Image (cartoon, rainbow, N blue to C red; front, side):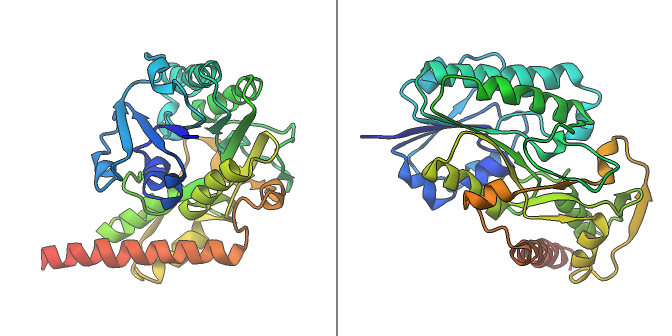
Length: 316
């Protein structure tokens, strides 16, 4: 029996990494939906022939024809820059809340057996306590429209009549992919370091927050589709770091790194800790802190030697 998967937002940071993963071959029909509003056309290079690309907008299009006969849906599409959403509340609600629910309802109507929704760890927000928050905590303090509407979309999606529904609260993603974005902390730090710009850290810079390597993100998605544990919300974090710890890794490859401190526009830069024991028990990815640090160091090395090396050869 053939299996069909639809991935929305498939040319973005996470989506483009999934498209180049050999585990996707388990599906006979692969459809990628994206509006290409971010113009990440580099994600289209060297894709397997069986992948079909569809240019659609999840807000204005019902996707009925695309979802016909679908088995699994991975919903990644959304507005992703939390800082920019502060000035775009209406658009963020349309995409991250109404758009997400629209795709989920259409998937249920099409008979999907599994639906994966990418929420965000940023829905938790800051806390004055040392609480390590699990998925069932009542202490939820989203600090941006991005986080607020991701959180508001979770329960309506979980309530739909789909046999398996998974909501991932991923930590801030880091790692290379064809569709990678550079506004997230680690990626932005590395890019600025490589091109010789100072790295800016939101004051005070000591609060730890959750990060997730792209390796672990892919593992979590593919493993949850394969093993199909109980439906629900799953935190996914490789490790908790503060910005100073990240810059120390970068300094191994860029010793002259210049660090400056600025006042943040949003409050959830203060730091927060998450409990990922649920994902660990489900064996979704390797939760070892040592593995997380290795992923960060490998990424810093890749960016430094490949991009910095090419820039030096170009300028030389």
